[in-house]
Amino acid sequence: MYNYRGTGLDNIWLLNGYEEHETPLGKSISIEDLDNLHKAIAGALVDSKPELTGKEFRFLRTELEMSQTTLAEYIGVQAQTVANWEKENVPVQKYGDHIIRHLYKRYFGGDPDIVALVNRLNDLEKDHFHRVKFEHNSKDGTSAWKMVQQRDAA
Image (cartoon, rainbow, N blue to C red; front, side, top):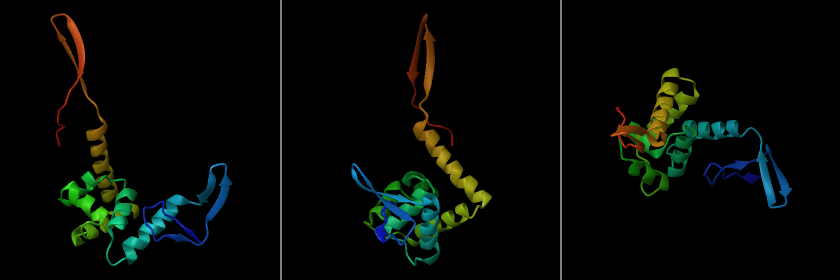
């Protein structure tokens, strides 16, 4: 058995579907069909786990490719609240638990409305945090570009 910790979860054990390799840098593991392994793990959490731990909550959030900030805004809490849940400083509140399960199940179930919602939320954050804007100013015969800080319209 292999204790797979690539999910951030300590309790995932693989009975097969992996190979150990010796490399010049030491032992290496390759896992077959990693995407479907993650979906199987998430499905087990969503369908079978009575209460999510912070690590499990984080795993589902990262499978949705959502940041703490984006998910927090969607849920209606501060990003620090999500961070605390994930660090297990405080228990994951039931509404957070229910929302992440619902989003995951419907997103990977192919619900077009939820897929569009999650993708749009993720795109908005990418635009907000990764779009660097520049403005060209031309005054008195001089020309200059400068980065501008402005809030995007919601």
